[in-house]
Each structure stands twice: as structure tokens, then as C-alpha cells.
Image (tube, rainbow, N blue to C red):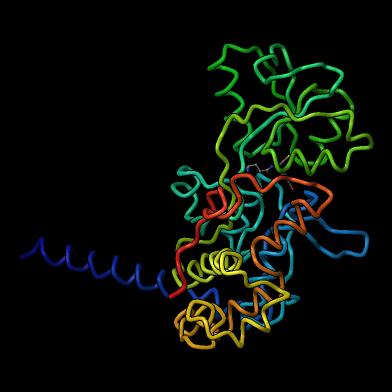
Amino acid sequence: MRMIKPLLAAVAAFALGAAVGAEAQTLKTVQDRGKLICGVSQGIAGFSIKDDKGEWSGFDVDFCRALAAAIFNDPSKVEFVPLSASERFDALKNKQIDVLSRNSTWTLGRENDSRLVFAGVTYYDGQAFLVPKSRNLTSALELDGSKVCIQKGTTSEPNAADFFETNHINYEIVEGDKVADVVSDYLAGKCNALSTDESQLFALRSQFPKPADHMILPDVISKEPLGPVVRQDDMQWFNIVKWVNFALLDAEEMGVGSKTIDDAMKSQKPSVKRLVGTDSDLGKPLGLSNAWAANAIRAVGNYGEMFDRNVGAHSKLGIPRGLNELWDNGGIQYAPPIR
Ligand SMILES: N[C@@H](CCC(=O)N[C@@H](CS)C(=O)NCC(=O)O)C(=O)O
């Protein structure tokens, strides 16, 4: 009996702890504050970058705007906090931000170590190498003896080490704290290759003085599923972030977008009615209005529009949809149904 009491006390304490954790009210905090605080990069064109007027744009930025629209029916109710690779996860753990939407790769180690959880994959990516064309290389297997510029605190560094060691290639890493350091080191010739996720190579190169002098080698050496991250202690918030991503994907699949959203509100199609909330109560349990998805779609368009405008065919970056095509169009983007 004497053993049972402390055991019961421990179980009760654990249950209480779990309950307190489960009650973490990120949505309420965001609503009371009147704006969402979203962690983004310090400047990756097409993904998250601030212009001269202080206006943020990009794919990761638009995801935050979609979230703000789902919560407030106003995509402008969001503040962006630029974070380096090394700062980003602490900023989320310390509650400096509500969500991280910054080209971050979903890995087991990050969920194990950080009390953080990835809410999905907004962009399937992989790591590659950017080199001066003057090196006349055709494959990453020819990088022997290279100095490779990489940003600290990224998956890019251990991935590169794995690749070079597995292939018995001599290399030296030139580490930069910030993305600006990595770029300036590369352009100054302190290294003769730059490695990160392929999408970011497209983005960085687009801002070089002479982009055409640099090429991305065809080898993709890793899987980099990029997506938004939240804290593990708030299932409601996790579900909101996760389902906003799914709603944008489902909208594309159903042909609902920023230009057709008003027609969609009048649609008699059961799946469209559920998505836009004209015949469903699916928003309320999330703590949102039933028009949550319609508001997000009206603000940023569906997934395809968000992709094209920022990084795809109709953007400066011109990245092919590739793996990020919907599953019914040859890609692997597949969202569970809204029902
Ligand atoms: N997806 C990788 C790499 C992400 C990353 O931080 N890449 C650099 C590319 S140089 C970047 O975006 N830096 C932007 C910044 O620090 O603001 C990860 O999650 O570790």
C-alpha cells in the first residue's frame, strides 16, 4: 500500500502535466493578440524575403498569410520574425513565434530533441550543389577537393558529409552563420561550391550579379521535406496549421482557387461545400469559423497558385513543380479529405 500512494501521486502528476500541456492555447493567444507571429528566413527569394518597403513575400510567407486568413479572415494580421538556421527552433520553443514557416526539413532528430512537431510538408525538396560554370563539372561526384559553403545549423552540413564520405570524395566545409555570409563567401571565392536545398539554390542564384555564370549540378543527395513547425504541446494549433496546408492542396485538387472562390461558395458539389464551409461544421471544432478554408483560399489562392506565383513557372525562380505536383498529376502532394 505504501508503494501505491507515491505511484498514484506520480500518475496524477503526469496526468495533470499532460492535461496542462494539452490545454496550451496558442489559438487563444493569437486571437487575443490580434495577430499571428510567424518565423521565416532572413531572406530567401521566393520563399520569405522583405523588400525595400518592408513588405514580406514568398511561399512560406503566404502560408502564414493563409493561416492568418483562416483565423482572422484577414491575411495582413501577421508579423514576420526573420530567423537564421541556428535560431529558428529555439525561437519556437521559447514562444517568440507561434509557428515556424521557414524552409525547414522534417527529421526525426528535430522532433525528438526539440519538443517540436512538423505539421506537414508544404514543399518536397532535396539537397544539391551550386558551382561556377567555369569549373566545367557535370556531376557532384566530380567535386573532389572542393571547398563547400554551407550554413551552420542546417541539415545540409551532415548530408554533405554523408555524401562525400560515402563516395570517398575529399572536401572542406566553409561554414557561414547567416545566409548572407554563405553567399558572400561563395561570391568572393572562399569556396568553389555552395550546397543547400535545391529550391534555395534557385533562390540564391536568382539574386547573384551574374546568375548565368552558375549552375546547379543534377545530383540530389538527400530528402528534404520542408514544412511548418509548431510546439508539441498544443494539438488544436497543430491541427489548424496542418489542415490549412491540406485545405490549400485539396482546393487545388477540386479546382477551387482565388479566382473561383465566389463561385465555389455557391457550388452544389458536396466536396466543395464541405471545403468552403457552406454545408459543414468542420471549422468550429478547430476553433475557427466554418469559412476558415474559404478565407485562406481567397487570401493566397490554392496550393498551385501559391507555388506558381512565388517559386514556379510564373515567378523569377521558375522551379518546375516536380514532386510538388498533386498526386493525381504525377507528383506526391496528397492531402487527406475534408469531411
Ligand atoms: N532545409 C534545411 C536547410 C535550411 C536552411 O536554413 N537553408 C539556408 C540556405 S543557405 C537558408 O535558408 N538560410 C536562410 C536564413 O538563414 O535566413 C534545414 O532545415 O536545415
